[in-house]
Image 1: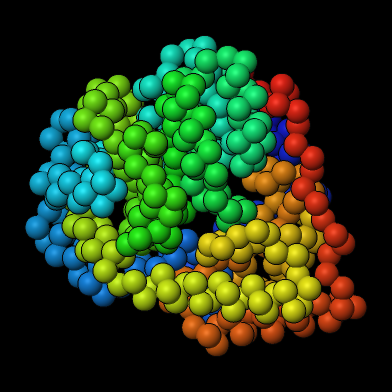
Image 2: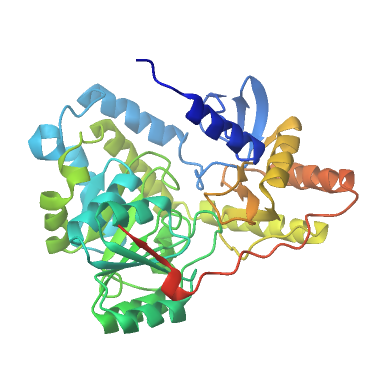
Length: 410
């Protein structure tokens, strides 16, 4: 019997009709602002390579040297014989960088979040998460069969209301929110977690390397340590420019994950050469402070130019600078219009963001130039002129649900 794909086809047609169609773009060449995409030269404002390290000669050289020593694969899971001295050296460096006793490498940030939440909870445990947390954090609680309740975005009072009703096992938040670019109120969340006896976990994928002293991330920005935030997850494929993720914390936390995080135990270790390259990128990120300073310059320049144009920016001081447009069709049209001018800025639409808050997600890198920023602003100005000098109608995010309704029971 043949498989009937008609229902799948109908779903795909509905996505296209709603302005939610996505397509793969093919890049030729390394990660950098100027690249060939789908056979055309493009200026990209869509990469998470915030510090411009993904194509850094020293990082590339370390990776190449690592392949000469280790080959291209680790051959097994960490607990079999895939854990090398290169992995160990990187874990020790990440532990020192984050000011924690130990760190543990995971293959991806998604796998790290799945591993942590499943290892630290049991079915029925209450997990409280920010409404705008990354999908991997939401999925992790659901797959762990925890009772997931979501508090209003970056709203410590909403969290306090939930905590007052019932004992939570985990409180989980992004440090920098990937689609809005704003920071979680970590000091307030840490106080609530401490007073309620819950673990606080921070996914700082978009903060590490970018903000705080030496790029220490959102925790460094707020001067918080392991006592306030016991569980820290960070990724290596964004500001550090390589690939993978890690969790940093106490000896007991890391040993627990080694034994009980299924996404760690049952997967092949990342290539050792990748660990060698990441050691170099970590050193560069910490020492070359000019990269963060340049990022700050580009962010300020763009926000001032966008303000003069009347664009509706969100409240972000990070390299993630969303232009809020509202409807998915409008965001898609703006993205395509920019692409026609050789500028790649993705349209972010539901379900990645709430209904009515579709946007262009502009991201900056230390590898951009002042000319690049000027070209983007000029293209946006021309788009506004073509639309009669008017930006999208005033858009406000959909009102949050009442706290009692913010639940997803797994």
